[in-house]
Length: 197
Image (cartoon, rainbow, N blue to C red; front, side, top):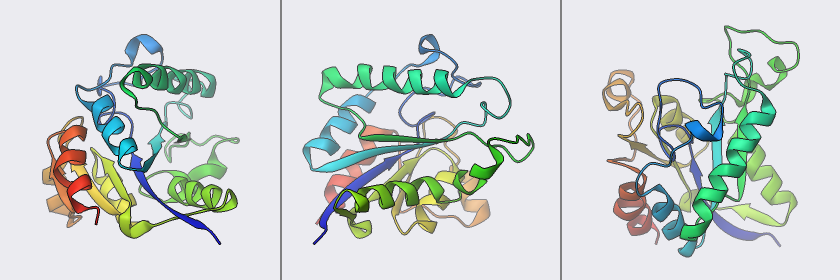
């Protein structure tokens, strides 16, 4: 029998780290948002698995390499660890519809708001003997595509105002998050932990 788990799916840029207005291509560009490490540590201590799902179209555009992206993710965990925080899995999507690429185009199903990265995480947990309890899991991000991805995947969605903070765009498109938070720490403290029954 599969053991049920709850997962916090997190966008990266603008949610965990500062959105610098361009692609993060090195460790020097990666800066945690204040309170992000504390938020992840709180969620972990409450029993959540932490899974990052991030569009990284800079790969298809030739701005950043997969190796650079993976090194940035190693660095992210290095920064999170001292606070008792870390990510269990990180998934990234290298594609962009305006930049066709013979290697990366086959991953178009994973580009948010498509649910490919979430689906893959759920499948890999199932293969390891765990069932993701969607009713107790959340998707947190700073863009409309994050909210939509969470909704399509059957998760409760939270929009944070850090990064792009597309609150108005969500309203215009009729994509309404379950909660709007000032930042990741507010999202976890103000909604995730209080909603987990």
